[in-house]
Length: 320
Image (cartoon, rainbow, N blue to C red):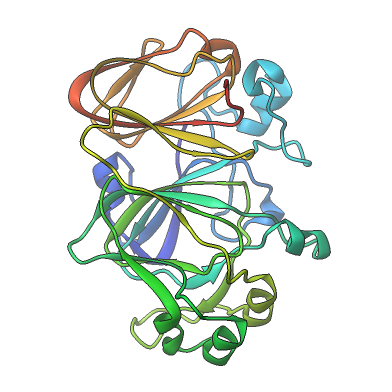
């Protein structure tokens, strides 16, 4: 898939090392690898529909592929209510701290038609020494505490800060207060939504333009009891399950040789985060993301030619 690049005040230039053609003089914070959002649902990019990079379907959007191929593409997964692809996959490069924010859960969305459900997962690809992730509220912190500090730097003291280590994985349920720390590059898998409620944007630390806060919305959508789920990398892992939810599941593959993916005839998204991989005769290089249609997934073998391969396999429906 051809990436969609998003300029962000907190973005950096590291995505160039992952094959992205960055525009000169721009801070690029996000590369939308797999995206299929309608224009009215997005403010970050002018066109949030990623397109096929080459071959007979070059230039087609995911929406067009769904309309053309249906179950041959999606398998037993369903598109969104609007008919779009039910997943959003990104690379995020944080030169500076991202805003302290949260996303709405199903209960909030049921009462606010303009909001879209968003749950997400982070795989740490790279991290500067001393970099952190901010994940959830510290023990004993409640909504009243957040309300008293919302919009100010003091809110950071309410957050649980954890070291960012390459290979670690975190699942962030909707309603969790969080922030991606400066110096961290992550692969992000999420439900297809751009709804974000900001509580604090570090304007007193960084010379960045003012962005809208959403204090009332955030305080209504916050879920203080929600915690992130952590999977720490171990050296013995070659293939491992990172998360499995109704919305999506993720596995990590590392090492050399041939890796056989889940044989279920279901759609797969593959992200190469180190090295290279060969999938059904197509070479995937560092930073590239591909979609394997459900009709081809049952015969898929991930054959790597290098020792340092790191590949995320993302599915919508489990074969288990």
